[in-house]
Length: 309
Image 1: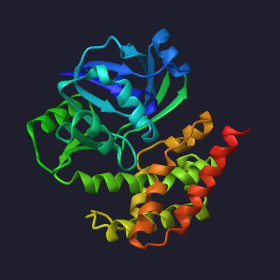
Image 2 (image 1 turned 120 degrees about the vertical axis):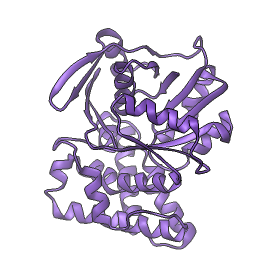
Image 3 (image 1 turned 135 degrees about the vertical axis):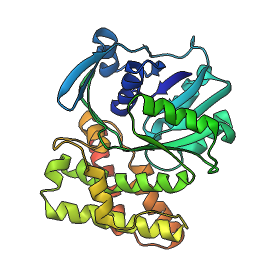
Image 4 (image 1 turned 30 degrees about the horizontal axis):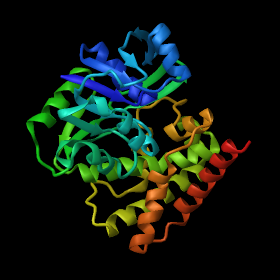
């Protein structure tokens, strides 16, 4: 199976590097950045459970001359999904599948515009990846589940092949007949910590030492849970504290959320697709979301200052 990883930030580099290390035929695709330049020069340096190793990966910054692949794994930020798949058109053949392993709501619908809904799958991963320096990532995958599913809930051979691919590389992976519920479950994970850590600049370990911050996290999740109920989403967990615990479980004290990493890099965040999605759907279903609305406002303010220093 020929695989392309579209989006090689911390998490994309984690999947691309570890799949390559396991012997998979992987092409990593990302525009030029300091991180990409460092990987091209020195290889991808992966630190996992205190051990560092270097993996040489197949990485390109332009798809113009690339051949179609069997599977595209999309790991760009949600606000770049359309631009990324547009740039990856040469990778799309008549049989190419795409799987979104992104945060937030709505990515699968964008991919379906380019491949057709019948060739788009969804995945949710709790694997952690942090870019500690250009070309270097800190990986947390111990006891971190990845779930893949067909949007219509079928359990297909192609879905099982992707599960076997991931499991073979050491990513604990399961298939789901209700991936839409899992999309919401992952959204809740991101709602629980992303915006709060982005505003406070706290790592996971520090966050848990501030009771007021923890209370804000669980209050944001409680609002999102009520929105999900009104929207008719079937969830397997309904305790905000349990969701926060799941978010931080097994990750190191100094782990940083992707939203915090974005802010530290001076980049735009996925706030519109995470807490912002909760606010929009809350308005649609008549559910008040004052905590999420405030968190969105705070992150928008940070983004504005980053753009207008």
